[in-house]
Image (cartoon, rainbow, N blue to C red):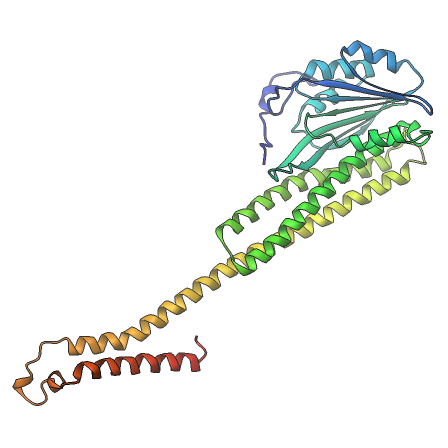
Length: 360
């Protein structure tokens, strides 16, 4: 799992609204992509200059601006300045440690949330910071470079003609948020499948590798819970926002978004309970295995106690010529065989007794 905590102390002493990037070091370039469309027309392009945004914002079409990369505050400030975003909101955009939130202004609605996905090759949980804002005829998204869950929304816009449904920015914003929540379901389902496989393995063979896998899954669930619990507040807040930017036709979709977040939370809590039960099962399995080992060792020691006694008796240095009761067995021609017969009889008798008592 990637590092989730980064130094917030870099902002110490700065004035509120200072756009300072807080997050992992990035070596990639920041890209600005634009989708500008109406019912019958669609333009997609990657901008080379910030000033090119202005031409799209001055048209009556719907404009979606996506900033891929938060590690260059100047780019975030430039895009936010053209859209009239408040400096405190831009500060939240570049602070990847920020908590999910929703705020409503007279000109736009601003949302911060977390996007989660698992790397297919490593199974590592990746947490990315996402900012979404929408006004009357524009939507802007800010996200960290990596996996882009918004591709599904782009595909729907390209394939939907006429684009009546996507002609409202509140519905486009909902579709973007819904794509993020859908990525949560993929993570939750993957974790659930891992828990089921792990349960079978631990029930049969509790090993240290199984305990390490449980700890790894618990860390993933902590990150997932930290992201999805505030998202429930965001979805509920959007549904309750009294803003002219959110139409009555979009509110049912926002309620559906809220229900999806609650469903994710319920599944996360269920997985947490399963992991707790699985950890108890692991400890029980290890304890039972230790008890079985101790039982076998105790039985072996119990069998050898009388055998050791016999060996100690006949290993003493007695002079059999001193008298008839002075270890006469030492002079028997079959004394050695008698000793082993007695030892086998004692050991076999103990084993029969243990089996009859169902200790074996």
